[in-house]
Image (cartoon, rainbow, N blue to C red; front, side, top):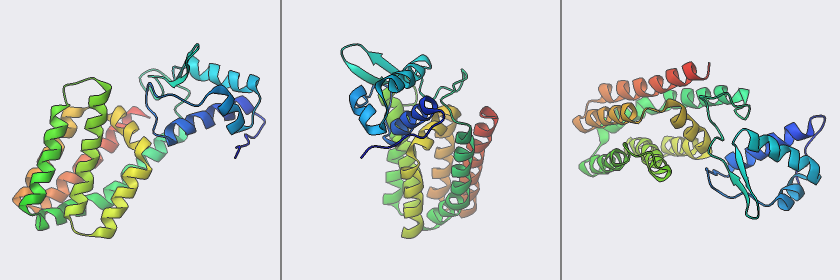
Length: 234
């Protein structure tokens, strides 16, 4: 079913819809997009309009047009060091609201996890951090992806250890539905070692059964991330 793009700024709107397509699909640098013909049909636009949107995206590095091969996600889709018109003004608010939601829910769950954890739970959490630690020093895209998955799994498992299945589902939904925002947070925060050290401290408090410390450390961790995001997207 085609998705009509409203005027008056058809090329601008189409550019934004293309970016939504990439983000919603969780696509990363090097992933292939549908063909130009398929995109024209999908968004119900003419070929010249599509070409204009593609040129804009290629100019900012969001996509790569490979002659005879197709359209691919570029390495600079969400770059933040160099000004990038593809980063939407509302993105900062969305990222901060996501972190606010997590701040309300996750610290008390970390405290409950410290009270309820069993040796098997600690073993699983430690295995996730070991996995994350193995990828700290690598700049490879695959390592970054594994690190992100391990970090998100750590937060999910802490919520799971807390023993409230409803709140665990809430956290899982936040991290899954907003997966693209979580990846953006990781890229902007861009301090793997600091993130790893804070996770390690949270695990130590949970293992020791220190409910208040675990809650406080989780709150400090998320607040720290939020502060960095606020500063860098200001």
